[in-house]
View 1 (cartoon, rainbow, N blue to C red):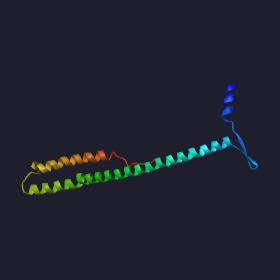
View 2 (view 1 turned 90 degrees about the horizontal axis):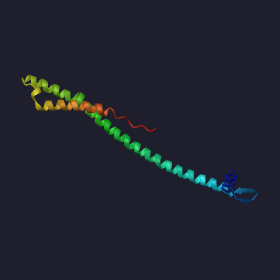
View 3 (view 1 turned 120 degrees about the vertical axis):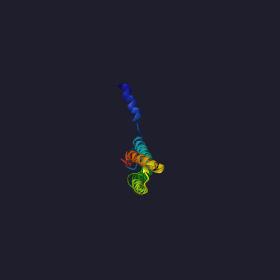
View 4 (view 1 turned 180 degrees about the vertical axis):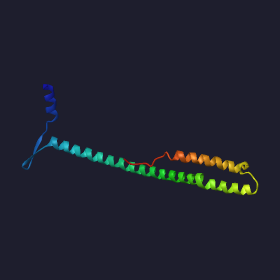
Length: 132
């Protein structure tokens, strides 16, 4: 207990200087200046981190928007445009007495439509980035 008092008394010992009619304890002023310095540094550091976070969020948002644009294009082709082309081709082929199912390009397009639908499903799992 005695040792603890000695340590604390040495740690918190301060010198006094007379300034006009006020006593200023140098130990206290040093602590205040240290706190000011620490807080200024922490604020600068926090601002840098926040700025970097904002920049990264902008990049993530642009990336997500590009992904969404591609997803929408695939969706249009897989669910609307390509099936309409196949339908028109099948009608024309039927008029000529040809089976569209035997045309390799139609087979390939049907496979790509299925792949596109699966890809749209996978891309739908991506979420728009949000800042906390």
